[in-house]
Length: 73
Ligand SMILES: [Zn+2]
Image (tube, rainbow, N blue to C red; front, side, top):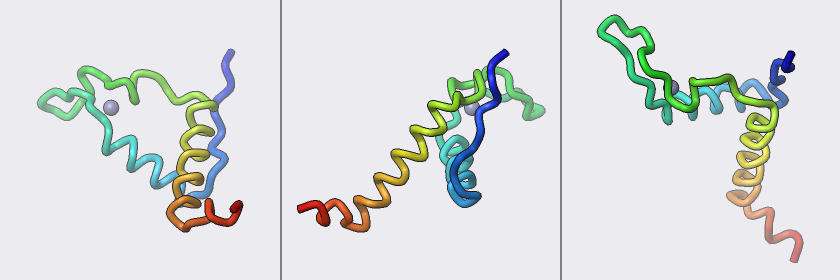
């Protein structure tokens, strides 16, 4: 039985993750708002690796935005 993935980021990062999923969702809904055809994001729950990758990429992007990549020079 597969393990439930654990969120290892902050609450704010979770909100941003859920917003990103919503933003990129291409599910098709019927007239009553029920999901008719799930998109790839909603077809299966995310794996631990996918969640970890999201956090890693988000944190790297944040560091680059703050110019921390210049510190290593
Ligand atoms: Zn979706």
